[in-house]
Image (cartoon, rainbow, N blue to C red; front, side):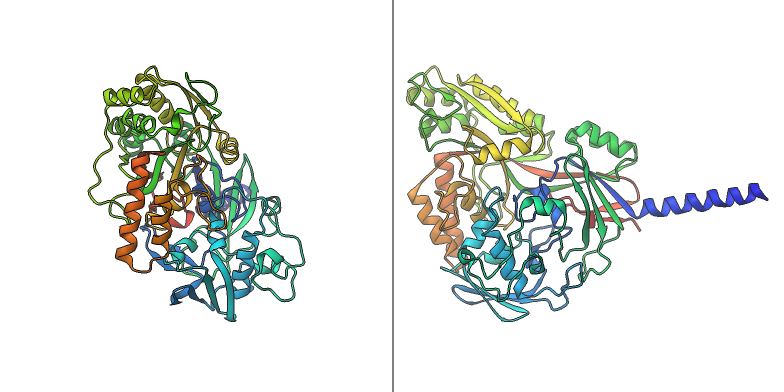
Length: 538
C-alpha cells in the first residue's frame, strides 16, 4: 500500500512538473537588455523585452505595417495636429484604466529623463509642442510643423502609468514640470521594478543584470495579443555556440541568432528554425566633424583627419567586398546593402546599383587625397550585440589594410561601447539600425542630419557629419504630407548621403530563430524576439 501511494505521488509530481514546464517559455538571447526603463535606450533587445510589458499608441506588425495598439484609431485633423482615440478597454496590469493623462505623463517623463542614453524617444517628444485632452479617451498631439510620419514614430514610444507620479493638474509643459510634484523616475528606479507597470500581456517578476529576466503573465490583460505562457524566462548567452548548446540540451525552448552554419545541424537534430529578412542596416560611421580624431593617425601630422576627405571615405567603401562578407562572415543569411534601407520601402532608391568593390580605384583615391601610403585607423565595435559583429569588424579591417590603411580593431561589450560612442570616443564605429518606421526618413533623421536637438534630428550623428543640402531636403520631406513628393525628397537625401559616404553601408541582417519541436514561431522584420510570437504547435 505504501509503495502504491509512493508511485501515485511520483506520478502526480511528474505530471505537475510537466505542466509547470509547459507553462514556461525559456528564451536564449544573443544580447542582454540594458535596462527595464522603456525610455532609457532604443535598442532592439531593450524594445523586445519591454514590449512584453509596455505598449505604444500605435504598433507595427511583424511585417512593419501600422496597426492599432493603445489607440484604436488616429487621423490628422489639420496639418500640424494628430488626433488619437484611445481604446476604452485598455488597462494597466494593476487594473487602472489607460487615459489621456498617461499619454501626457509619458511624454513629459521622456523630456525629463536625465538618465537616458540616446535620443530616439526624446527626438519624437521634442517635435510635439502641445498635447491636449478633449476627454479621457482622446488626445491631440500638435507639432510645430507638419509631421506625416508621427504615427510611425510613435510605434517605438511605450506608454507608462501616470499613477507612479504625484500631481494635481497634469499639463503638457515639460520645461515647467507638467504639474508633477514628485521626482521623475530614473533608470535605477525602473531596474528595481517599482515603476514597471504597463498595459502589456506580461508583468516584470525580476530583472537582474548578468543573470536574467523573468516575466509573469498579466492575467488581467485587456488586449488580443496571445499570452500562452504563464512565465517567460530570458537569459543572455552572447556566444552562438553555447546558446545553441542550450537549445539542444533543453535549457532553452527558443534562441535568437543561431549561426547560419548551424542551421543544418539544427534541422538534423529535430529542431526548427525561422529566417526573416530584416530592416536592420549594418554600417560604419566615420568621424568627419573634427580634427584631430582620437583613433586616426595621419602622416600629415597630429591635427589632420583623413576621414574628412570624401575621396578617402569613398576609398574605404570601395575596399570592402560586401558580397563576400555576406557569403563568408554572415553565412549567406544577410543581404549586401547598396543604400540605408531595403529597396521597396518608402523613400528607398529603386534599382540602386551595387556599391562598387574596386581596391585598385580605392588606392588611387587615397593617392589623389594626398595619402599614397595610407594612414592609421582603429575600427571600434561591439562584440556581443549584432550578428557576428566582432568577426565582421575584423574582416573589414583586413580589407582596409589591403589598400594601405593600417587598420586595428577594438571590440567591447555593448554596455561599454554604447556609452563611449555617445561620448564621441571613436573615429570609425560600427552601427546597426532598424528603420522601424518603415521609411527612409528614420535612418536619415537619427544618423545623417546635422545634430539639432531643437528640431529633434541628428541625435545619433556621432561622426559630426553635416550637409546643408541634405538637411534641407530631409526637413522638407518630413513636413510634406504629399506621399509622392515626400518619397522624392527622401530619395534625394539618401543619394546625397551615399555620395558623401560618411556612413558606409555593409549589409542588411536577417533575423534567425531556432526552437524546439512542438512550437511555432513568427519572426519579425524588426528582429524583436517576442515570447508572444512563440505558440504551442497544434
